[in-house]
Amino acid sequence: MQRLSSRGTFWNKRIFPLIWFGMLAFFFFVPLRDLRSQGGMPAVFFIVPVLMAAFSYFLFKKMFFDLADEVFDAGDSLIVRFGSEQERVLLSEIINISYSYMANPARITLTLRTPGRFGKEISFMPPQRLIPFAKSPIVANLIDRIDAARRA
Image 1 (cartoon, rainbow, N blue to C red):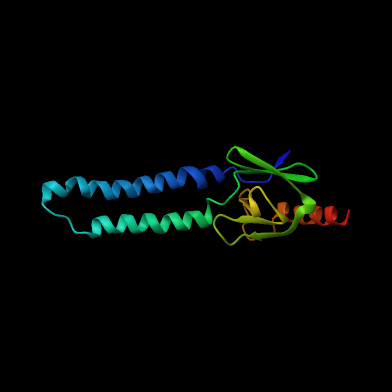
Image 2 (cartoon, rainbow, N blue to C red):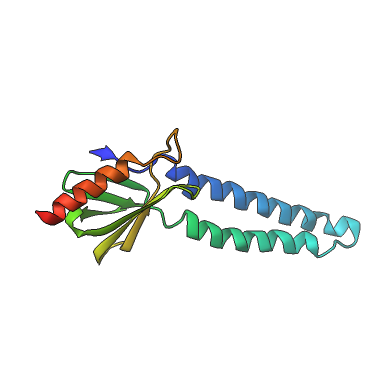
């Protein structure tokens, strides 16, 4: 089976948010620790990290948390994995494939005829390319194969 999703998905979904929210917690708790020694701290030292954390959570939820962990090509179907759960999606069940290469990270979204275990849409991050604005060979190949599976 060929892997269609990027190996960087783990970094974007798990490691980067952990580092980001860890830094925000650090910037929240350091002024809190110094609060007693200085007699008072402006509220901005506490409000800004909390607002950044809330905004970041909603941004990460929209950009990273909905991405499939792994997607593999299994011939007439795709194997999609989120955590420990996986699902086989037949190519004939895919009604649309969209590719947004101008986003960071780039994403491929599959729209399914009938909702599966992971919903009606499945998004994943394709492998990074050297030429970012060129057509993706993964998407072009999938479109041809999905069309052939629908006609069969």
